[in-house]
Length: 301
Length: 266
Ligand SMILES: Nc1ncnc2c1ncn2[C@@H]1O[C@H](COP(=O)(O)OP(=O)(O)OP(=O)(O)O)[C@@H](O)[C@H]1O
Ligand SMILES: [Mg+2]
Image (tube, rainbow over all chains, first blue to last red; front, side, top):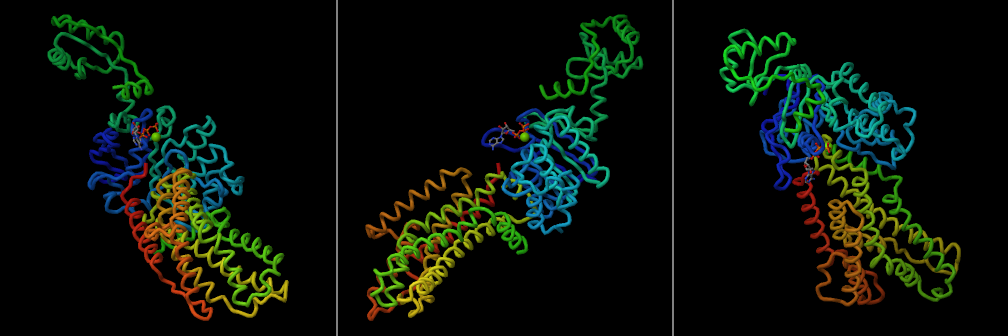
């Protein structure tokens, strides 16, 4: 195991019948990070999370949490995880507080934690109201309180802001920040909107159709999205050689050469250099992608 | 083991205010009040009987409805409610991602339903005895206080309890696997009716259908008692249908655990 990894999957694949839902996914989630797990509908986010919780069975040697094989240390690993999958699971005939008390009973947790959790998610005022009568946002917060009750090191949240209004989203975001800053948790949070998690995550994984297409820090994602000069010529390899010889950081990416964009003047210089040495320049464009477009382009491959 | 005990406690905590739990208490109570009221208003019809026969009539009024219909339906309803609490709250995925062995969660739920059934039948026996003595207080000419039926009555209800283990286990499995109302309840009702018909027709292989077991248990008890000389109320606790019921229970319980353990939670 690589040190500091809380979640690690090794070429994880999963099928529903003959549909390949996860295809060689290798997640790496470090301790203390907030990992945003992004992908459009049906990408395989919930499936990944269910695998991480051993709700869906996989072979040995594929999923490691806290450095241990999930299949061999199920109970020990699960005691370090709090989770919220899709809609929060809540008994609607019990009050919010009773829901927490029941979970505390089940997990042998001191009942003083119940009031702490109610406080933490701002539900103290509504503690004795039937959970079935809670608003969506309140249910979501109760779900998080349930997940946090046994003080897990890792919190796995599946679209916790789904269906919430802007205020609700901000509240959840603040709560998550607080958990990481004050309580040192590691958080794995899925979403289908980059903008929703962009401001709070430290790391990002982008999944589509079961393939992990990007994984890295938010800076690395920004780097991918820095403006580039995209050049197409008749002979990419020779052109790259020429450009590198002249001190440009040129790279070939499929059918274009990429150079970090500096200025218009700089672009013009590159063009004349290529023309001077008789390279045929087919196109020379500046690619500008914001993160959201980048995310879209990554997931539309 | 701790996980199992805590799970049982949690089952009680979750259901204590729901019909699943209350039905185990309310049903015997209501049925008792109704039948007692009936006997009170028609006391003259049994006045001339011996003490033993008065008890026999009184108890028979309960067992007539209970053995064939009410007990199976109550079990169908209880196994359904206990599992439906989790289906309705989408709780299975949550429960199975807690650091508790699947075995504890599963067996605790099963044991809790068994407990509810035992509670219900024990209350039936107790309420019948109490009502008998109450009738005697209300109408001193009755002879309920001249014969102690409690031993026989509890033995009889224990027999019913054992006879219902097969139904309970099958219905438990149905309700565990199917989230909807219709499948477990519908299949349960159909099989119960089928059981009543086959048991009444005296079909030779009726004992293979768990849904007939409570009825068959009562029938075999009656046969034995009627064959006894000098009105002895002796009968065997264990009989063919009880053994079948217990074997079915053990098998179904094991199958259920196997399914839960291997099945992915989608
Ligand atoms: N129980 C199931 N049986 C069969 N196929 C399933 C099942 N659950 C999910 N799938 C399929 O697996 C794929 C991935 O689904 P998944 O729920 O993981 O997506 P997701 O990324 O969570 O999407 P969303 O953003 O809509 O929640 C989908 O194509 C879906 O149809
Ligand atoms: Mg999902």
